[in-house]
Length: 444
Image 1 (spheres, rainbow, N blue to C red):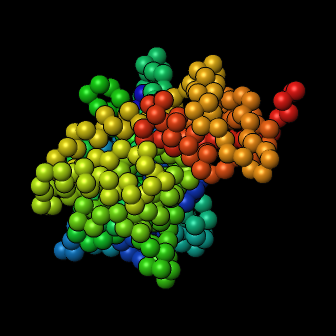
Image 2: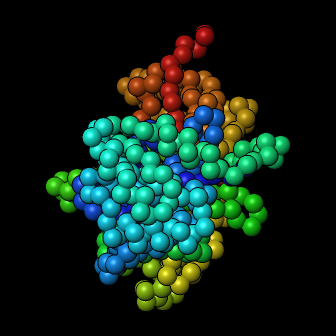
Image 3: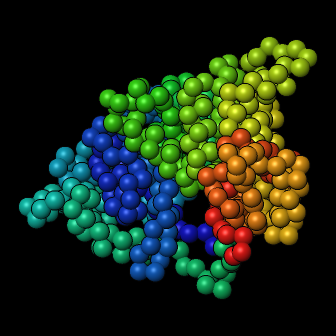
């Protein structure tokens, strides 16, 4: 069953993200004393007194600004309002009631949803008197809290769950499997454009300004065959030298790395005009090290002049730049025109299932015997590696343990040979595989 949705809205810099982070129990939204820092909706699951719900943090609503980013923030906040079952309207006790607060209140009244008026930054008892002026908004009793000190949270959460629609416990269904897919890459390669194209709606901001998406944003989506995907749109990862003096950018990169860690499948977006850059290679390395299934997606393919064989030549160039990830399928798309984007979900599902593949022990050992029979491990001095037995111990990625006479006798080249032999024998496209060596005496 879908969880109730609670949207946190209000002017910029009234403490929405600080509240969100405290409730979520971890630093999910970027918190910085700069208006307009949170620029997209951020989701987190929360629970209070046995009631589960989804909390949405939004960028601040500046009703009168003509700035392109602030106007897009208004659009995203409006989307959150449309999705919400309950709206928490945040104001600032220290600043008092402002004209912008009144304009936002008028917007929320038209939504026809339960609205809780939250007066934040009531950090000490002397500020309680500041609550009275907010009655002017006509949104009921103001609820005074302090996001920083977590004062008044219990009262607010009690009010939130009291507004939830009644649910029928008998309608609860078994939890479905959701494939977590993270869209990662350098700034301005079209990650948000691809997200919007896949979802068929303006879910995340799209702008020609590099770094528009600063947070990793989750969206659940079901394809026609009923498969559920959680699409994680992430901030662009710049070169480290470009971000050393930008604390905001550092948070964004950390969040993108965290998105890679929690995804099942990573979509590495590459700009067709630039090819695979050094930074693309570094991001690919992060994905590989985390053992994630991966698809390399070459975006903006519509912008290249082509001739016979261009696609295959480009594919080889991509794999040449990331040889350690030569198992990755490469898709050529245009998020802008929609060219071939209809193939993305099918390929994600395919590599996800591959990453969870299990091979029976009998078949596995037959393949190991074939591999060593075809090419014996090289001698190192007077000794040779012997593989007594192999078994699969894990998935995502598929992980195999080899019991050997001496693990130091496994050379890099022979391990690479075994991996290639496995890949020729088993369908393992899109997923890394891991080999673990365990020393074992033959008599054991």
